[in-house]
Image (tube, rainbow, N blue to C red; front, side):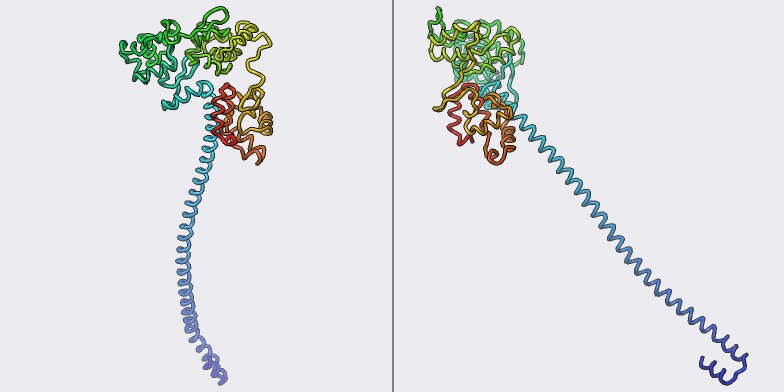
Length: 412
């Protein structure tokens, strides 16, 4: 450029100037081309570096997405497990409430003695026969066997139904001597039970006539005739067939009948069919209590007011009030249950629980719900033993109720 300038200043001819410029143009283009090449190479390097970085970032993003997917799957599984466990917990709670209610109903049906035998036998299913539940190997399912004879058989080594079914008749007769029951008849009953032939057992027992028993020689003069002690037919309204039915249900003595609730007797009668269901057992426990106490005058007065064992309007099936633990309670007074006071009784009445029988059939979980809903002053109470206490009161088992309450502290 300096040379061109000099040439211009020196008044170089135009042709020379043009020639010089033409010679410089290739050099200039070459320089520009080289510069562009290096710029492109530089940008290519930058692009390659960015591409590499992008690929690295894409890999990391893919890994993070995979991790996120795993986390979401794990979270979904956890939520599903939590929901499943929640449903299972709710179902288990409902099943527990139902099972508790069924346990209370079953305990009332089979009675505490049979329930204890049932638990000792470690069985999962009691045997139902003639509307009565029996624990496996409970000898009271056999006609002609009471508690004393059952204990005698156990002591002799006959501890199960199978033992009786396989017994040697001569040896068994020696144990049964004086009981009024023959070995052949008992073995026959045991085999029917082992075969689960309940219709056959029912037919056999209904046709079975026991030999005169020598075990109970005590007799009582009442209403113009002589009665053997604990003869259930002394109760107006009970005849031979009903007496046999009650014996099969484990009610053998006046004291047994005294402690049985009319509702329990009604269940036994209803289960035996319409010919038995027509009877009214409302006064039978009262009559039996008087017989067990030897109060023959009161029993005669009571029976004079009855028609076929039924009340004539002035006789109730339970007393208006009872004396218990040094206090007088009205019948179905919930405050007889240790742990229940006037306010809790009123709370239960509002919830529809107004009698001992209703309270005995209510699961402790349901009672706790009622208490919790009433506020912290009520929620602090533990109703776990209340249905059992109410059941004992309903069944008039005052001694058992007293023993249970002696073991409790404020109903706990």
